[in-house]
Image (tube, rainbow, N blue to C red; front, side, top):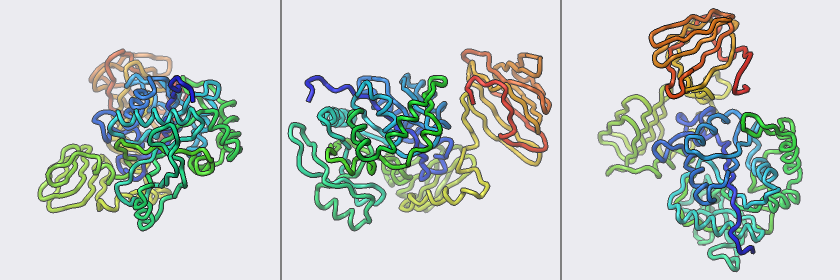
Length: 475
């Protein structure tokens, strides 16, 4: 074991979908990007700040879906946390993501601290102590996971049963076995042994050590990871993996691919508070509560209500004479569920696939690299949007085959390209973009956002009706 402290490089996996937290979490804005626990900070931002605190602020690797690249970049820039963003063309589970990170860091060979972007962790001092012990174990050639002391026989988590202690590291153990999401009776029996932990999905290992074990147990995943990194390209500061090579990678969790097979697996029992924020029940457990056991967010009025989670995004939500409920209100969807069945919200989301509905895909506010748009009203042949363009940002130079657009500036100043004409449009002024006209919308201000109302009209109103000629975001 080296006398110097091992160099730690955080690897943050940012590819989850969070379907059990619908209607807040959706495909285009999943839970890791939402401020569910820490005021204005998202789960991703909290994870990055934690990672930087225990690693000394070394640049992290964030592995995310290319759909979310600008969301990740914006949220990390807000907290001044630089990172190498590795873009997956599609999800291939955690083994592929971790293998890519290990290959990218192979020359440096740091201890990779693999964290999920959507977990909540309390007691940062205890977290830092656990990471330090895990890094020492990883430096000695172990592949380490963090075990969470179970508080109840949870059937939605995998379990780790510890074996013999590892000499030289306090409270560190060989792993006797992994148990995949047992039924309640078996989970209770595991807890009764006093040797079982929830599998947190957080890991620590040397980059080259992981590569050695992947070569032994899953050379196909490792080969696909190597090929995708070798064929990668830099794109606006992102590392875009080779598409075909990565899509050829088998989909498997790092637990099954390596951790359950290696004879050098170790577990550090965690003495810090942990939650995967995996359901509304989990969020209720994390949240501060009133004297009647209610957790509330937003504009909420409760009367004769107990042990409930009430989450208001926009409108007043009032309850009377209810208990043990989850109530979540957003602009376009309302969830009312028994709190004990919050894991089944995923089934509601899965039932929307193929139905033509979009409430599981995006909110009425949709984020883009230049800002966001929000659908306000629609009907046959028209759509009304609110658009916000960040200071200095610009939409692509584009045209539409099937619609015309009318822009009314609400605040700020718009620079509008329409054909060969370029003009500045001020507050309370408007401009008309005919169907088929080449156009671009820009915010020339360096410090003031641009807000406008857009009215689309035409025989087909669709986000697909965009022909881009030039785009600074390379979409």
